[in-house]
Structure formats: C-alpha cells, structure tokens
Image (cartoon, rainbow, N blue to C red; front, side, top):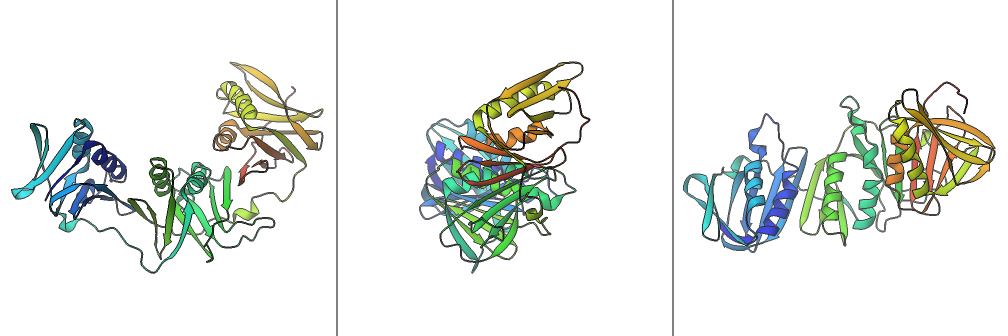
Length: 379
C-alpha cells in the first residue's frame, strides 16, 4: 500500500474516527485504525463493536492495500506533522513508513484480516433529513440522557418514526430522552418518513453524528434503520451503531396535559437571571425557587454560609397569581442553553408538579423538569 495526501485532510479524518476507538477492551485489535487505499480515495475506519465509523478522504493512490495502525500512536504522529504532503507506505512485515519533506516515521502495523468489519444495513427503512435540523434535534435531546450504568435504556435517545399519538403533535419524527429527573422531546415534520417504528440510539453515536455535521453543516443526513443497527451517512462519512434493546418509559404520561400558570419571557434574560442565582444555589444543593407573586416572577436562592439572591425577572404571567416551585438550577439552565428561540413559556402548577418549558411559536420542543420538595420558607 502506498498513497499521498495532505496533512490537514488526513488529520481531520483520523481525528474523527479516533473518538470511536475503544481505549479499554479485551479485544486489543479494536484499539487500531484501519487505513484502506482504494482507487482514488483513502478510507479511514474504526470500530469498537458498538459504534463504527468510516471517513473517506481524497488521496493519490500509488498502490492499493490496507493496514491497521495503533490509533493513539498514529493520531499523535499525524497531529504533529507539518502542513505539507504526506506519503504513507507499507514495507515488509507490516512496517508503516510515514514520510514528509526529507523526514519520516516508521511504526509497526498489523494485518487487517482480523479487524471486525462495519455492519452495512441492507433493505432497511431509510429517511433523509436536513443536517441543520437533525443536528439541532440531537443537541436538544442528547443532554438529558442518563449517565448511570444502572439505567442502560435511559443512556440512549428514543427515536420515533410515524404519526404521533399526542394531541396537537403533527411531527412524524420525534426524539425523546430522560434521566428520571428531566425529559426532553423534540419533534419535526420530515418528508419521506412514511413508516412507523421506534428505536433507542446510544447517546455517544448521536453525539458523533452531531460532530460530523458541525464540521460541514450544509447537506442531508441519510438514516438507515435495520434490525439491530442504525446508520447515518453524511457526505464522505458513515456511522453505524448498535441499538439499545429494552423498553423506553412511556414519556407521554410524564408531559402535563394542562397547567395553572403560564409565564412568558425572553429566553436570554431568564437564563442570565438563573445563572446569577446559580452562584448562590451551587452552595445549597443547586436548589433554586421560582415564585410567582403579585403578577411577577422571582428567582430565589439561598445558602446559609454564603448568602441569598431574590431577583425579579421581567415576564408576562397568565393564569393563577401565586405559585412557588423549587428546581435543580442546573437542569433548568441545560434546557435554556439549547434553545435558539427568543422567547419561552414556563408552565407551572404547584410545588410538587413538574415544570414545562416550551419555545414560543418556534420548534416542537418540550422540556419537563421535576420539582424538588423543600420546606416552605419566608421570602
């Protein structure tokens, strides 16, 4: 095998697949990156048996072939190479020569014969979605997954295809995530999505898809759904992931059907106010109280050894004239940070009822945050 390519393309490709490489595994071979020189392109692959990724980059191929290279070593070398043309060739006994200008590295490679091939989904159900929309759907759900190994089903995002069973929901593609303390739901109307199905996708796979889109935002992502896998094809990149098996909670039971008070406010103003409250709340279990009183909204936090804050937030309030609910301030901030809409509606009912955040006249996004039971205190 022998090929030439520029350093920047090689580094971008290696950097993309390296995140997939398993750092700890009982199967050492998956700690490598596969380089395959074919015709007029170089395919760079990684596979940790849960998620696999392929990236194609332009290269001048002098001799076709394939070799496995240790991911960490190869990535470290490529990152330090000068910005010039790079020549990579295999020599006898698996030695890989990396040449640049008048210098070179030699590293030991392995035969690719035992490297697990990436699953290719055939005859699956497919749908195409605009990359910017899909990236936003990922951003607005993936942050709410559970980090607990005991809640494996909740470590992924539920993706539903087909007509929604919820009143007023016209989407035909929905993504839902929850960690038991909050829930994020984002829907969209996608052309060509005529089938019905629901799968749970690992959060890591979706995060890699979002990074893939971020590097080159304009285009369409093709989703292909198979029996145990889902794949994402975007321009010169391909990601395939195992699906999480299990029963996702019925999220429709969590979303309140009505609320007593609706508070409309500027998203940025609300975020900045609770970020200030978080300075105090961080010293008191991150608890913030949102209080509606006299037609006004207040953000309140206190910590005995630090101090307190009581901030009036400019808002339009409809419904009841009195309410007080405590939340984990971090969970509220997380939702506001992924919203691009200028205004949001915060819906409240009582101290033991969940809060609901929705954008005003914007995307089909719903965020539910569970309340924290606290003792009544004077303000």
